[in-house]
Image 1 (cartoon, helix red, strand yellow):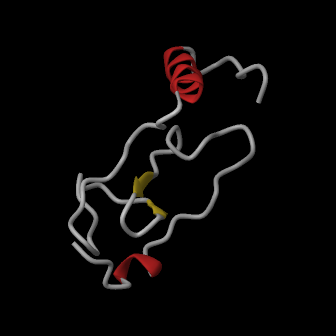
Image 2 (image 1 turned 90 degrees about the horizontal axis):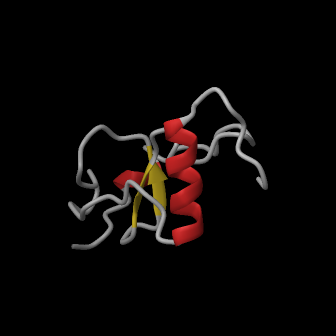
Amino acid sequence: MVCKGICERLRAYKPSARLGRYAAGQRRCQICEVFLKWPSLSCPCCGHKLRMSPRNMKLKGILKAGLAQPNQTIAGK
C-alpha cells in the first residue's frame, strides 16, 4: 500500500469553524495523510481503510455529543 498521488486531487478542504472534519463526513487516510470526502471505506489512492472517527477519546466524545444533539453548539471548541 503506497500513495500514488491520486488523493491530492480528491483532498477535502477544512469545513467551517463550528463543524469538525469527521462531523462533516470527511474521512482520513493514514497512509496518504490526507482528509477525503469519499463515500467508500477504502482510500482510492492506496486502498488503505479510511478513518471515520478521531483517535483521541476527548474528541470522540465531542463528536458523539455533536451527533446526538445536532441543534446545540459544542462547548469548548
